Image (tube, rainbow, N blue to C red; front, side, top):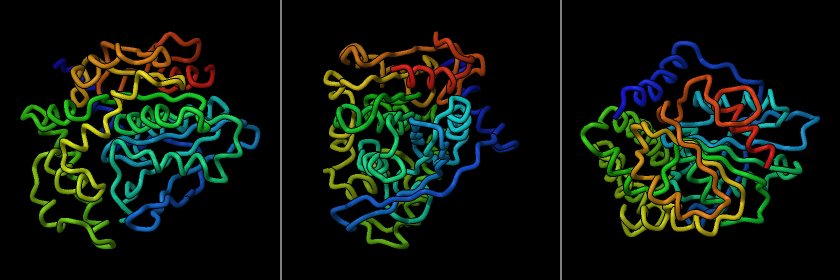
Length: 312
């Protein structure tokens, strides 16, 4: 694995911690999602409404992230420059409210956001997801081709969840795994304080592998037979041949968290609706500021991706 990949994965997070990226002013947003076990769960986010805009960008964070993640703020700034309204949404529980646990195949939250009064008034809805959020966006586009999304983009997103999990649970990925598990355990404790869950927080606190979290937390909560069943049923790769909505996948060959092996074997099976941009520089959801994806717009990941989205 190239040091370039690690640098562009870690450096943007450190810069954001020291000097948070600015974002346009936005107001709190929320809606509810029907749920067979809890009746309904609330999802939240931050909404920037531009009166002159006829299109809205929905931004979905990655595993362990939220609408306040550094890449979500970059997306909001790019949407502002492009004249788009923007919803940075939290998948259920990502705001640490204790509402519920999300997972990589759960598209109900995005569907509820699209159907909320604030979003359905727009002529066009575009979706930009990072990592797990991009996986959700691709899966939604494949599941609901005529349900209000004009185009989607996924950045650093796996297509095969089990291959990605095996990489993150490998010894070389201990730093990234520790970071992710820390965030996931906080979310689990918040939910367990409010709602009945199959395993006590103490059992989750003791785990040291992502597969254990998926086995003990995600699978029983969302009625999968186990972690393997979750990966098999939730992974988007089997749905890609039927993809009809224009979709863009941006991936780095040096991504230390989402390896080539979790993406490359399956892009060739996708329908022509999926466009792929492979980059030699960059890491996980972090790329050089002069990134050029071939779009006639300012350079940089978000301006380039947004130009692709709005011109579909």
